[in-house]
Image (cartoon, rainbow, N blue to C red; front, side):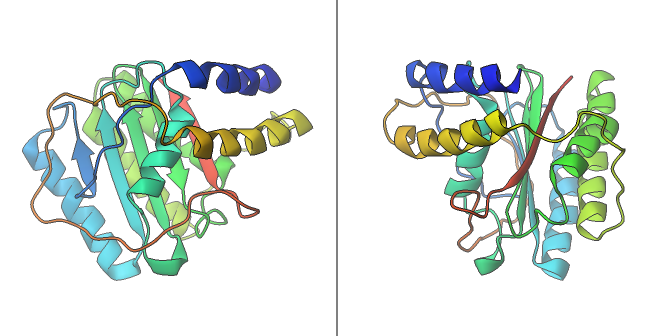
Length: 226
C-alpha cells in the first residue's frame, strides 16, 4: 500500500500548483481565524519561553487547504524556507494543521529525530491532538500536542507499541525519490496563497539556518487526519 502511495505522489505532484509558502514570524500562526487572540497569545508565550530556556524552536501553523498539494511536501518546504530551528542544532519542530482538509503533520528537524521519531510523533497525533480536533476544540488539541512534543524532547513521553511492523524497502526507495522531486519542483510551479485570516500574538522570533531532511541524515515526521 505504501508503494502505491509514493507512486501516486510522484505522478500527481507535477500537475498540482505549488502553494505559496507563508513567511512565519511567530511561534503560533493562524491563517484561518480558528484561534482567538488570547489563545494565540498563550501559545506564543509558552513557545517563546520554551525556546528561551532550551533553544528548541517549536512552531504551529494553521492553514485552510492545500488544494490537493501533498501535505508531506508542503510541510518540509515550509520548515526549510522558514529555517525553523536554531543555528547548527537543527532543533526545530513544525506542527502543521490543514483545517479544511482535516490533515495535520509533525515535521521534526534531524537534530531532534532521536527524541521525536516517527513512532512518537504518530502517537502524539493519534492520542493527544486528533481526539480534541474531532470534538471541535482546536486550541486544546494544539495545546496538548505541544505539551506532548515538549515531553518527548525531554524523554518523558512514551509512545504506544506499534503493531504495523517496520517500513518495507519500497517506502525507503520512494522516500529518496520523493526528496529529489521536492528540490526539482520548488521553483517551478505558480503559487496558491493560503488565504484566510492571519492572526499572531505579540512579539516575534528569529531563526538561524536549519536542515530538514536531505542527504543521509533524513528527518522524522508523522501525518494524521481527523
